[in-house]
Length: 285
Length: 278
Image (cartoon, rainbow over all chains, first blue to last red; front, side, top):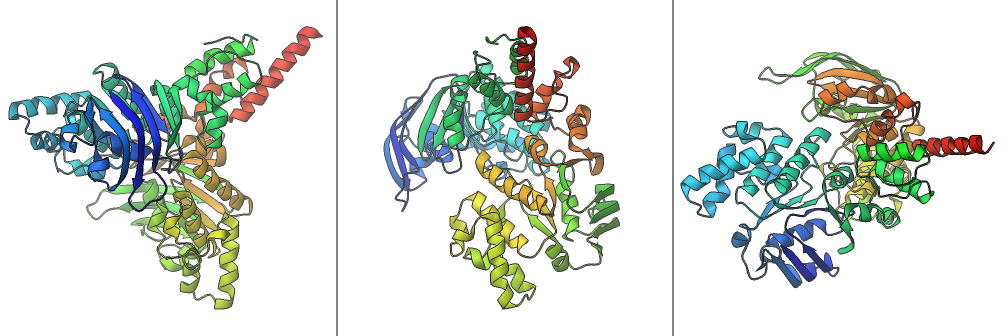
């Protein structure tokens, strides 16, 4: 689905690369989390998936990025939009219409989708994001979480195969953040949309993603199944990425030799394995 | 230090954002104000330095009636650190930025330099005095904003979402500075969604829901109120949720951090080992 080889990118007038020799392959149906300290290049990378880099952001671009078999240098953003949906951190910056229905229709109209089809797709994407009741609502009166759902609905109305999100929950409260990830899980499980989400909320990435990519200073320093990557806590701590508390607790027990199984990704798993540890049983979940 | 009595605030169109709020905060406290988006937390905070004036009720800050005192005077007692530090930084170098408030308060020139340096050292940015603040990282810009506020001798620090939009270590850096300031006697009021932060730093928690106070008490007590937290779209910190599952078995009743739980597990297993060997 996504094949990146030797990708480097320098913003205009910058001597330091924002991305430095990135190699990354993402398969259909994956739910990938991307984390790393500020300035690691995460947002820059997301702009390479949808073609904003190199088509709209000036700089020096090296290497190759292919999304759904389309080379992002040779394919314009409009064509890439059929394959890649993008949702950014600030929904205010993306929402242009005053009514939810019009907002979702906007992208579809721009791509000349037939009228009858537009109506179907609006209904569909509202259902997929759980906001059918907001179809005729004013976008200015929505809560932060609702606005984020509208932004996601607009992106998926184009039926992309990949949805790329850059910190979609940074302004949301804990329940609102979880609601967004539940929607992403549904899009991934039921509709088989490949999800790539940049987040700082490690607890959410741990619970929902099946793969974690860790970036630092423009490079990918770790990339693998979530439990494996979380196991490399010394590397993560060194770059300032902190694991979710329950995972960290079990990691400490593992280091002490009191536990030998896989790291847990949530409270339920931690509870089961901790019960075993207290009974002197060291193996898995 | 801060007395809020029956405070209400409503917009011109009549919608009441805050209703009959009663809160007393004493000098030296570390209080977290939590609640879902739109609950009124930030609106409440803006009353503390006079940015908003109550439509009913009274706020007294450091002995001054907030509705009758100029914002500029209140601002020297209560310092605000906004969620986005760029909203409060505008000078072209760090020194001028920190000195700005002092100049406005007509502090003698001879005193300004030492006050600025002192504030910069407190937050660890003394090496950036001649740097353009906008070339610094977000965490560093937050520290510049913090130094600007500290330089004015603030007694109360209000933080609005201090760790949002930052990576973990940047967030930790600013919180450790804030913790140290609290130990030195500065009252801290922190508005946040981050429950892990609340568990690690706050001694008292106030939940605001629909413009009123839903809960107000010591951190451990409020973290146990799952229903109230759920009503506010909040969740207890993850470690607390895990610890709670073991309470019936007698474990982790006072453990609220990873370190606490780890220590208790080690102690217990060593005890079991000694008992079976003995």
